Image (cartoon, rainbow, N blue to C red; front, side, top):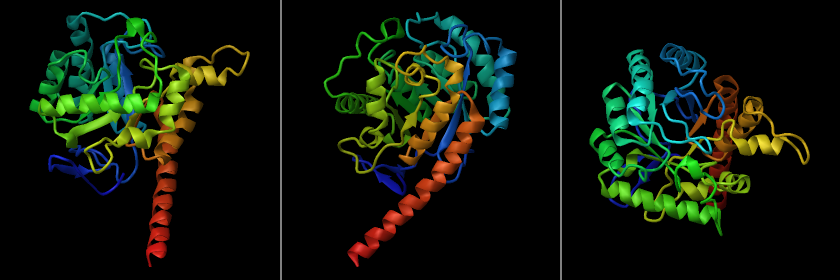
Length: 314
């Protein structure tokens, strides 16, 4: 996913991802650190609910090497009910403002257009919408007006019924097609394709077998009809339940979320080697090491492939 991506409407951007002013990680995959300002997130609910603790945690993640801090005030764990918008705003705005004021590249993790708009005014520079614009039809116009990068996640409904819609005949083909539908809708609303990052939505209306199939087919998710080059892809697998279930073995108990960090590091390396643009993680150091190693591996793999093609064409 290198070089120039040429889009069907004549626009172009680096195929490694959108332009992120003030952020330069070279040729490696980016690392997004998670700050959940919630009482009920699946792996760390309540740990960072206090704004001062959330701000300190964001600063710590950056000191450990995170490129982006993703701040969210509404849990999307299975079974979670929505919180009032006023509550979501009270959770995220002080944290976004403080971290952005410290010069950190902040992403706002929200499904609400008004929360996104106010967070952008407070200094956020990216929107991570797990609903891909489906939860709030005003979201694409907010993103378009701001001209910021937009993470579009595959989604089929709110967390209160997380697995009811997890029915697929061909999960990769259907997720790819449904992301394409979202892409068409948001670009029609004015979002530049050059600002779009796709996320297959691991765990969102997905059973473990669906997640693994999607991870093995990230290149298909990135490639969308009508676009000559692949879109950047974000992988958000950190501490998710399908890892804990895998690590449990055939008869053992499911591995606790916070004991899935080593497995997350392994998955990060594989995702980066497959060309992932960014990984969203709870624990930065091990994942950053995996990113650096896998990015170097991918660099040599791509170079070797280019040399082989040159020999074949000669």
